[in-house]
Every structure is written in C-alpha cells, then in structure tokens.
Amino acid sequence: MAQETSYPCENCKFRAHYDKNPKSVLGRFWRWHINFCPGWKNYFTHQDARTKAALREKYNFQKYQ
Image (cartoon, rainbow, N blue to C red; front, side):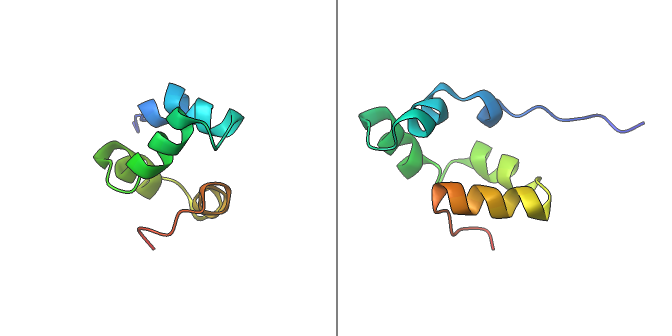
C-alpha cells in the first residue's frame, strides 16, 4: 500500500508571498532560499515531469535537471 507524502512546500507561507507578489521581501527571500533548500529539493524531485515543468516556468527554476 503506497503512502502519499505531504510536503510543507505545498503550503509554505513564504511561497504564498512570492505567488502574491514576487518582488516582496519575503517572496524574494523564498525564491533565493529554494536554490539550496533540502525540503524544496525533496519536494521538487518527487513531482511528475509535467508538474516539474510548470514549477520551472513559474519560478524560473533551473536546478535538478
């Protein structure tokens, strides 16, 4: 029986700040932070190819290709 994993990144308040206003201080901090965050890496690498592509485009994210 497979267990679905829940990731805090899905409901991150800093990510919500970025989504609302990418130029806000918290939004820019979150965007900088995902470049080395182990939680984001785990979340991102466990997504399907379509979701990864959408995340890459939305957040201009180039790591883990």
